[in-house]
Image (tube, rainbow over the protein chains, first blue to last red):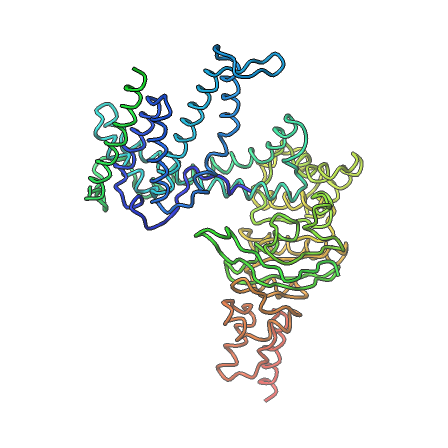
Amino acid sequence: MLQDITIGQYYPADSPIHALDPRTKLKAVFFFIFCLFWVNNIYGFIFAGVFLSSVVLSSKVPVGYVVKGLKPVLFVVSLTMLMSILTIPGDEAFRIFVFKGTWQGLRQAGIMAARIFMLISSASMLTLATSTIDLTDGLEALFLKIPLLKRFAHDMSMMMCIALRFIPTLVDETDRIMKAQMSRGADFQSGSFAQRAKSFIPILVPLFVSAFQRAYELAMAMESRCYTGGEGRTRMKLLEYTKLDYTANVVMVIVFCSMVASGVLVNR
Amino acid sequence: MSIEVRDLTHIYAQGTVFEQMAIEDVSFDVGAIDFIGVIGPTGSGKSTLIQHLNRLLAPTKGTVIVNGIDVNSKSVPMREICKRVGIVFQYPEYQLFEETVYKDVCFGPKNLGFDKEKIDFLAKESIELVGLDFETVKDLSPFELSGGQKRRVAIAGVLAMKPQILVLDEPASGLDPAGRADLLDSIQKMNKELGICIILVSHNMDDVAHYCDKVMVFSKGRLLRYGRTAEVFADSDFLLSSGLAPPQSKQLLIELKKRGIPVDDSVFSIEGAIDEILKWHSSLAGK
């Protein structure tokens, strides 16, 4: 039922993408998304698409997992696509009753969809191929480099670590509560939109109650083990760049430069 | 027969790295007013099995027939299944959500589309059945009750749907000994007086030995044994080899026998164990 949620899920596999340093992967996703917003023509998206698909393929994560991660945004993307096709002024491409679709609108819609899909895929690729512990270690290391965030680096990464850690727990919890309420005849599928929204109250209330309960228990457990924050903590596992990371960096520089260049050159 | 399960197999996450065989080729029949215990070590497939009884999980293979209807047939609405099979999950107090106990208990029957008078009657009846006083608790918030009371209200919420079969997953876990006995006694009453078929999933061998007429033993997704409680518990080697400990009273008799004291170690109830020890004691006094 809730097996479709892939955001934040880790897919263990033995691949070069899994073996990369989390800092390298974080930087890669950051710059990739940055470049995605720079790109505004087909050539740039081809570069991006080829890069992304080769990452997905070499990670040994089944493509289905990445595609499933796109499902939740499908509705929003289709809606925005429709809006931009119909509202952006320009040359008429087709006409349905009073609605006019324009070439410019179609182009814009395509660009936007490609952007959002690639953005989501790259982000879910990051979590699919990086364990939560690696991810937060990487985040903390990167935050420490940013002067403004330095003071909160540990707290922020700890918060993120806990949040990511609890996604599968809360998904399980939701599944359990849903099943319990379905056994009491609750119906989440049929009825009007308002009815369906209302039918989620029996899930949300218990879910919130247990989330607060869990937060309270975790805080107690951390405190009773003398957790006081990041100061003076040493780590068991130190992050170190390997040859693989240097190779990945070179590949990324080439790909991202080409993406940016395609945007600059073609539009000139 | 009220439940007929044939060749039931369930595989989780089939086709991924997380693939896992949960239950394999399980077949059994359950009578209309049976009180059945389901035992087995953690991960033996008990929870997966019970979720098949009201279509929460669809079988990878096999069929489940409850009172003549195929649970997985698309033409049968979920509501019809809920009227027949009520499932009380582990820690059911986590399903409470309404403002008052009364409203929460009414949630189930309301979903089944009963009329107002019937709902009112059923809510009252089931709250009394689980051993709470209707007038005292009905207007309280479920969140201000004690743990044991919450548990009872949650069970009442399922009972109020008038199921013919009631499945309970560890209903007594986390309760104190008195609360435990109280709750299981009321469950036994539902079986004996109201004729509800009970399926009790438990790790507590003493409870199962005391209350259940028949026992199913699961291990690694397979139904190893299904028979009368006395027969299953008589074979302590079998219990130990499937990762289960015999009831405590039986363990005592086994240890006594090992030390050369002439008691019958096929007995498994507390009363039986007392009789055995007294018999030995009086035979000593006779000498």
